[in-house]
Length: 595
View: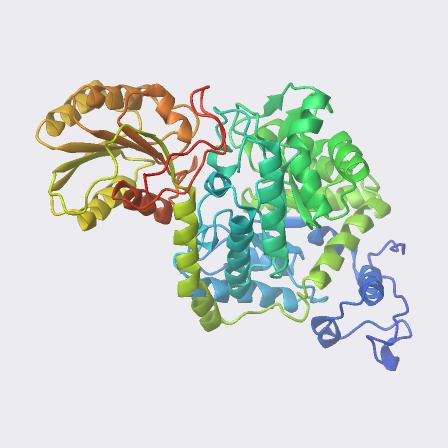
């Protein structure tokens, strides 16, 4: 491993002639074009290039590769000067992108980021990343939205998970993303988990393992790096790590038998990155969250599980980290613990604090050369594995074409149909397309959005000639006055569809509303938009469908919601529970209509 001298000038080293011309062998740096066009998939050649790049990099350039800031945007939704400064002055090696835009605009956005990186002294391409757990529709307005992971789990078909991941990766790469933070490998053993919920495939370890492996293969076979998250498991928490520091108290045996196997399966399948959890795992380290714990990241993940890929932290601006440790010091602790890339998602000032604190720690020896170089070797090798040097740009027109491929939307609808789960039906379903009964659709405004319930009503209108009316409650916890208003409207209709939503526990107002409607002695069908556990609070409802369509942020999977309406009118539901419900509904329970 080469050492740097005191004035931060990069040392030089000899480069093999297979990727450098003779005039550049004798301690001369590569030209930009040589680095840009590097595309060899020969392992020895990639190692030689990695060694050469390390010898050329200043401490500032090295630390930049370890920092992943969130980007900053202009009003026209293109990256702004702050983002340019992060890339060109601070030499960051990766970015995470939030917000929403259409596919061609986002392709231009990613191209601009890569262009800024190319203009730096060493034109090392960026990892361009984002959360696309259910498809590029999570951040791309014309992207394809697949069922959430609990919906995929309800299909019990890993092949469908792999198919979804393959399409997600094709669309992502076309738009310019080369790294996706998916799949969620957490086992959702706590029904009241406030942050994982429908983002998890199942409460069953083996099903989570099967599905997570399938999604890793689907992503990485289509040139997008997958990420198993949140290590070593976020499925049994009762605190949202965005808001506080979660802690789990189960034994080492429970950790080993329930929560670690999905991560081990993805490691065995070749997953190239794993994201840390901001959770204290008492059985391993009772003092520090996994993100900052050497016992967890190095001892457990590297040494016991044998993971050699990139360890990336979850967002360091989450309160579990920022409030307790601070952006800069937490970044140093994470790298000391074994993390390779620190996700700096706070303000611009906090992002610079992260970078400068890491740089100071490196220069003073708090972070050793050996420790930093191991991370850099992983990062640079993965950038070559995914051919980012020679394939860093994308075509906006091609991005639009790939993202709007009709077969992708059709696949999403077909998979959604296989996820919709009918848990109860006393004969109320299916409705007839020929009948003209009047229908009331009742449901909450969720995170200030009324579109979820209104879309159900509009879809019902397409199936029936009867009048469809709606009744919206102002929040997901209806007041007594709102319940009374809904009951009054229900007096004049033939049947009632009530949408419920919970991201952890179902609010009391929704429980009262559904049970009050059930007492009207009219057909009442409940459709859960979030977690499937809602039915335990109104067991006498005439029929109940689980869609798994909304998470704790309320972003919708419209195909899942609309497929649920199709099931109301006779389409065969394909889903079976991937979680059990209060002793009433076991794993793999799911009804179908008589053929």
